[in-house]
Length: 294
Image (cartoon, rainbow, N blue to C red):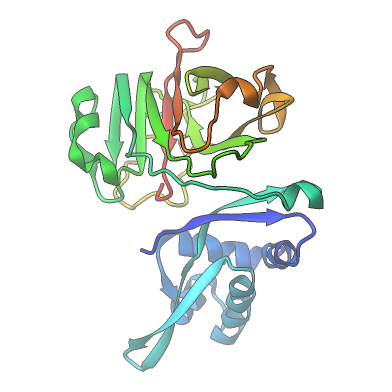
């Protein structure tokens, strides 16, 4: 399956309007759900939806215009068939004014298996789209070379650390830093009543803590592979940790007084991000971290 990406929308843009129109339909939402499981052609979608092919085609065209679905024509038993797939895995809506949204932005996407340091404890493990990596509940598995293909990792305690490149020009001033991730608590199997205080550090500075209420399960995640066990964690919550001159926030709500100047983000110097649960946290419920394939 082709790699899917984050799609960012600025409120008021023509692109955002097309996306809102495309999502304002129960049928098109169902098409997205079907394509989250597997790529399908128009005929297969018609069977699953109980609709005629011309009707399905019109809905797919609306999703294509919004950039949510991508299609290609491939040889089939009766000539060429239109094969459809999801084009994105996440949508991010920016509720900013035109001046803010026009500022230059540098984005780096980090595969979750490419951490530079991991100190896992308790129930822990990793998995790719096709299998578990190493052994469950064995911290040494976090050093398996196959970790590079990880799409989900979890630990009942400890932390994981990533080193991001920073190629901004010398002399550039960083006004705002954002970290987006899908994350939740980590309990044995899953537990909807399992709070965890998940903390983010940047360049060694504690930025903010978010208390996740649950290790989410019971409802299968849209992107999870077929082999993934039903009794395990199924999905997380998409969280945005941000820091600027006014302080640090989680999903736009003030979380700490730490400002961007305190993080010592310097052009041409790497940015070290740590995600974990402090040993003295009130809720020591671990965490799950999800990649683009889960």
